[in-house]
Each structure stands twice: as C-alpha cells, then as structure tokens.
Image (cartoon, rainbow, N blue to C red; front, side, top):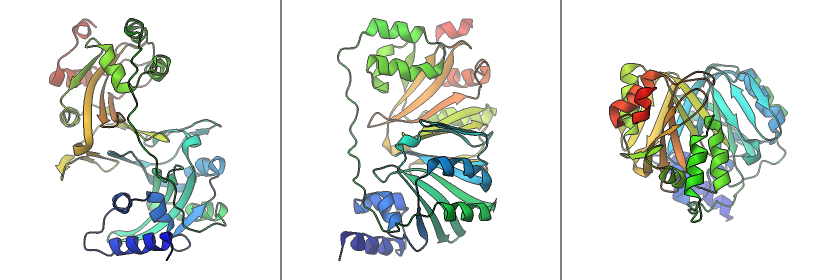
Length: 350
C-alpha cells in the first residue's frame, strides 16, 4: 500500500468517526498537509485546477455573493459579500469591495482545487488555494444565492489533467531571530517620522527587525504590551458602543479585512468568536503569546491599533478603528482603547 493510499484510508476513518475533526486538525494529527488530505479525493468530490491566477482571480467576481475565508494558525476570518473592484498585476492584487476586502500576494500561491462536500447542513461547494507547503491560504464558499453556473464554468475552464494525490513537504516554521545590532535611536526617529501606516513594513525591513522586537524597541511612547486576551474586551467594548472597527487577518499569501460594527460575541472551548451574519471571527486564545497596544503617526494624525501575536512571533490579528486614507481616526475607537488601557499623554492634546 502506498503512503498516499494509507493517508486516504486514515482520513476516511477519521471522517467516519463520531467526532470527525476538521480537515486542518486531521492533517496535523496525521502529520501531513491539509492539501494532501484534500487531494486524496481528487477525481471524486475534489478537482485540481490549473493555477492560472490571471484567469481565476478576476472571474471570482462572476460568482455573486459568497463567503471568503482566510486563516492563519490561530485565527479564522470569514466575510460574506461579492468580489468587486478586482485589480491584479504580477506581484500583488486587490479586491476592494465594501464587504470582501483583500490584499493578494499570488507569488505565494501554488495550487488550486474545488470541493463538493456533503454535511448535515447541506452541500458545501468551494474553491481552495494552497501554498507550496500544502497550507490553505484562502477559500471561497458558495451560498444559496451564489452563481452556481459561473462556478462550474470556471471549474471546467481551469480543470487540470492531473488528478492524482500530492504530498507537499511541510514547512519548518521558526521564530524570527532578534537583531542584536539595531540602532535604537535611529529606529525611534524613523518611527516618529512615519507619515502613513503602510510605511511601517518598510521601516522594519530597513532596520532588520522582527515585528515583536520592533514593538519592544520602540518603547512605551509608541507601544505598550497589554494583557494577552484583552483583545476580547476591546472587541466587546466596540460591540457595546457600536464603534466600527477594522479586523485584519493574514497568512503570507493574503490579507483579509473586515470593516464595520460587530454585535454577537461568544467564547467556547478556548475560542473567542464573533458570530454576525456577514462576519465571523474565530480566535484560538490558547495559542496566543503577546498582545500590544500600538500607535503610529500619520498625515491624518495618530493611528492606534491592537496587535496580537502567537508564539512564533507572527501577528495573527490586528485591530483598528474603521477609517480610510485621508480621514482621521475615529475618536470613538480611541476612546474604546483608552477606556481599557489609558491614553498616551500626547493624545489628550490632539
């Protein structure tokens, strides 16, 4: 029996158990990638498609209203809406709909599948994108009002001749090493000189700093470490005051953003959840390591955020007040943060 046959058999047994695990959890349990498990059903309810992103991405707009899912190791981010205002070039892409808001990095994408899966709640139909290590980056699920014909036509147009199972090499994940030769004074000067939050990544690259080291290096004038799970209080306070927020979740291949108010929150089995009709957020609180209250200068005034990290130093969730470039930060968002953590002295004079 081949290794793929063995994996297929084990996966079938797990799916048939009383408490069948989600595919990502099953992959971890079996020591393989999620793509490997999915691909064992190729030629049946799973189809491998050609990784033709120039064709695929623009045609997502034909599907109508769908659910877009992006996750990393610790946070799942789901929004419902349409893929609108799609822009794509060789290096990156944008989806700028009012509900589905994405930053795309197709160079990190490797493979594409469709899946039809029967559940107690009906059939789930999806496109699924994976990186070269077999990790799921993004999934698109059809709903009752989605364009099924557009899905099937796109599937047919991109169908691959290769419908065999695959077993990608898992990625060895290491925490980024601190830079022991950083010019602290220059780094803080550069932070003070920021004009746009989008300049932040370039500043980190210039100084060779992992993000968590950058926050420690910036000092309490710019970044303060706060209680680990206090993001639940912030989201709860934003829900109570109906303060519009922005919730960012990414994984190296895509960044997904929700903008709006949240309403229903709940904690269950170690997960914190937002459970609204158009937006779901699921955070595995047990795997978190650090939470930071951060502010950055910009042309539009100070911008405040909450940044949540796992034990690998990856930022798994970032929260802002809802805003657009050229518009100052919502005072209500600043008040929500200040009510939990206090305000920076300089902010009280703005």
